[in-house]
Image 1 (cartoon, one colour):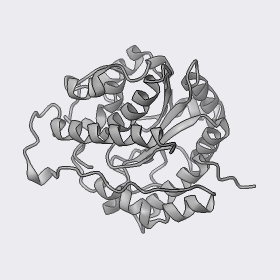
Image 2: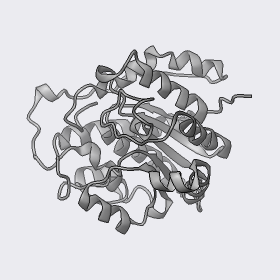
Image 3: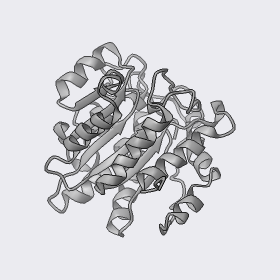
Image 4: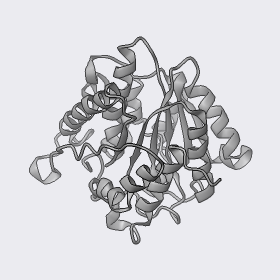
Amino acid sequence: MDLGQNRRGVDMGPSALRVAGLQARLKELGYTVEDFGNLAVRQAEEQHYGEKHAKYLHEIAETCRGLAELTERSLREGYLPLVLGGDHSIAVGSFSGVSGYFRKQGKKVGYLWLDAHGDMNTPETSPSGNVHGMPLAAIVGRGAPELVDLLGYQPKVAARNVALVGLRDLDNTERRLVKESGVHAFTMRDIDERGLRQVMIEALRAVLDDTEGFAVSLDMDFIEPSDAPGVGTPVRGGATYRESHLAMEMIADSKAMVSLEIVEINPVIDLHNMTAVLGVEMILSALGKKIL
């Protein structure tokens, strides 16, 4: 899906990851893999974008509802969901499915969000009206009802169990929303000053505070654009190649990840599919691949 933003192309991200050998590499790690295929998504050319403050909102909500059901089903059947995006608005669907599955068991999950952006705008604050800048706000209970109330309850996660890592590009009003929300936000300055390892220790502590585990949402713009050029919204000054692997390796070491999502890979502006190849590496590290 690429309805959540203006720049086209991230709808081809899942194909790029498959071409980069994702399934074969997962099987090499010893996993049994079932590819559920692509969800049907309405194309931008097929309809008007609707409300300018939240473009394609109804179509995105429809897709997220289907994704939530599929994600919950995969957990119910004993799989660990690996969701391939697509723009970041799909997170509302994938995490709703995860949250809903554990909620039915009377359990809570945390959320680790690796991203250059906060994605905590609402239709009232967004300067662009692009929904890919709004999913985390909706997940913690703020924003458009079509997203906030998905599956009939809100919030999907307590703000105190959310950790944002890698922030370096926030809209003016969004800064206030992040600070007021109660989420744990770690900027690139935090990583510069304290190191990625210490930041991840604190982030994992937050998402595992009185929870059954945590979901991970990796926006590839978390990583420095020289290593990951093919992303929807690149921002200079991101995590290095090794810092990114360390984050994923620490996630694997926790043995508490309940789902993984990777988004915003845009093959149209990539170089020889290098961002998707790196995306596969990130997935493998999060699922336990080690140097030794």
